[in-house]
Length: 140
Image (cartoon, rainbow, N blue to C red; front, top):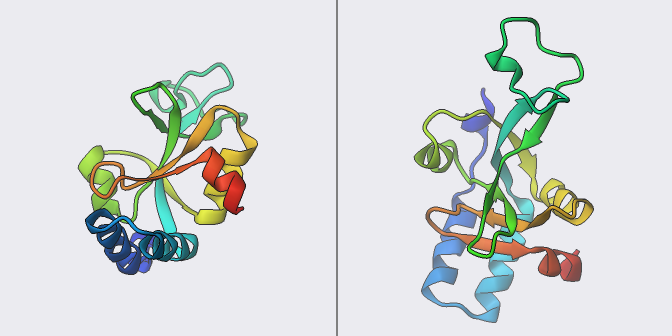
């Protein structure tokens, strides 16, 4: 079974929709609880140490190449990690994209340990639920 077949985030998506319908404390904490249990699809890119794309070169992949998370920016220019609840959500954004799966705790650790990230957003092109760095520092 592939990771995309094994990951089911329907409960989280439903709680996100309920939050978008009615923003209140109870719905927020329901989203928080469901989000903390979820596993997400995150777009990634493989980069050589010099920043070039090893896939575009003719030679072998540099053994020092690193997998980096792709980000988007909000209107203020703050870089955000993206958290997609399904491959369908991810490919609605970019039809061909490399990805991996990570947990909520991994998002929290990535945001808190990297000054470049201002937070992460779940399903940015549909439910669009943002966890800011300040929120993550407060709750976790």
